[in-house]
Image (cartoon, rainbow, N blue to C red; front, top):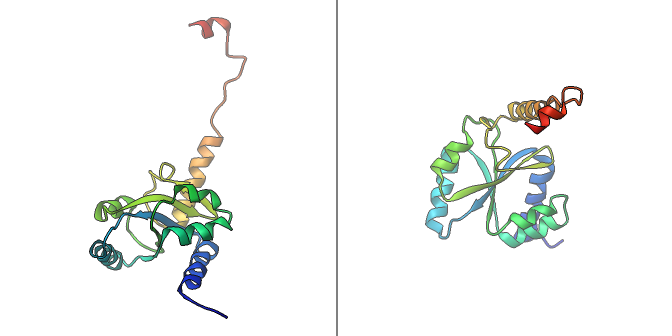
Length: 157
């Protein structure tokens, strides 16, 4: 069996998608090694698990998965950030590391965009699932307008 670095990285990407239910996609705008070293130091200070993947490797891996629509959004190196138990918020990450920007979040085989997770306060898996459940529950149970209460006079006003 031919086992090289490219195959190892593809297997690691597949491992992230299959086994880890909660992780973030960040665009990496680091253009040189010095800025990447600073980013790595910040990740190690906060004890975050991450994996940096380059453009073509992740695009080729995503083509054969259920996340093939994510290929449109990828335009450079991607950081897969796994945060297990941490008291770090998304705003703190973006404030301390200005060279990366949030792309999306994978939670239970679903991708949530930046707009959908703006109000997320914790990185706790259980709390975030509960928060998403409550927000969906609120949107689904919105009261609807009945036609009995509507009169032609109320519409014309």
